[in-house]
Length: 544
Image 1 (cartoon, one colour):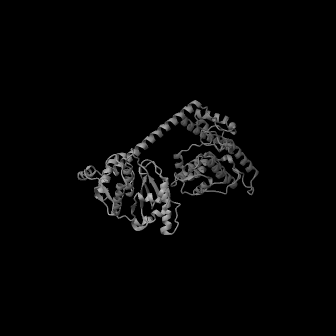
Image 2 (cartoon, one colour; image 1 turned 30 degrees about the horizontal axis):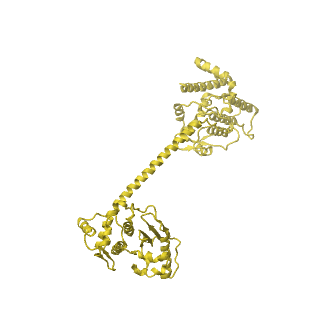
Image 3 (cartoon, rainbow, N blue to C red; image 1 turned 90 degrees about the horizontal axis):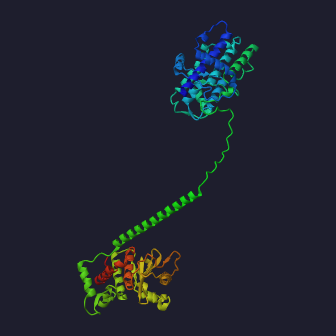
């Protein structure tokens, strides 16, 4: 409803403006008579009187958002545009181009499409008025005896038609809806396609150049025209646009300094309560994550144990093992004999029964079976398994002595310990406990494995010195030892839960490490391991 009322108001104002011009023309031209007053309906007469009384107030800044907005009728434009024979460029003067520039800069927001700009310039009262003034100026320069007030409505429409037709052609060009214009400099080349633009001047509505001879009567008529133009369209309102906001001014308004908004009052108790809830939630989440990680670790460990567990013995293998472990016979009877003179008697083999300590005879012979398995694998780099006597000789009477083991390296494959992959040393601690020390030559690491958690730093340091002396004795060089890593027994090393399974754990350390497996066995796997060791000794080769 408000929109329709505003449009009707525009139509009424446009008609009243035309009637005001007619009234002025009729008083000056006595030869022509107009009967428009009799034809006006009462509503328009009332509106004309109200409009006439409010003319004197137009110099005040207008607060209406509808000021200076013309009404456009496309049917009327098509009627006049059809009268043109061709699409020639329309010539405008500096004042009209300046009015176009002011109205374009008043558009918001930027950029605007060519179609919107053409429609705005076509229906703008300021541009229309300045174009009409330019036409009258050219007529006065050609015939100075004619007066300004002799202009009729028919001549007005006929003279304004070329500019509207040019704007119509501009709006109907291909792509006018898609092409966007942001500045006046971008708009000028587009207007030149339908208009003949002059060299712009500094001020709108400037008087004719001083070089043109102007009579005093013509100058008075020109000034009278400017006064009437100022009365109808105050220049200070030219920058107004159809917007609910207040009218824009020519000078830019100063940018207000942003004032920081006051902080809302905070409730310290509520904030502390929320922080406590967040911390409690985070603690529960971390605890849940730890439990989940531990569960996953246990699952992975169980899977590794199942994968690395020894295969169950067949019925024939089980009978063979039970006959050797539980059979009756002399204790000195030899049940296994190796190529190097190593033997295992019945008494030694029966130490593989549960809850029994292993002696060096069983451990040495099992290490020999591991060496045979490694030899059969035909790896590029071999593993070597020393007997427990090596560490005993190296640490003779509690002190390091390289000379005691200087010739032992001749027994290794290739007769060069530095070309091996791994070297294993069973360590006997006071004839009461078995451990294992291993040298990983390619990884440059020496590590100690103790099923009861002993560090073993003394033994790995002694083996490190042995490597240095071996390098000097065999290679005649000092070598580079800074990147070697000496590792004591770690918490991940499997631990025994009694005092008599250390020898079994030592054999399993060597068995798993020589095959590159992780140490995933536990105390529950000891009994199957004892049977596996016994079967390996009886067969003369380690069982996978």
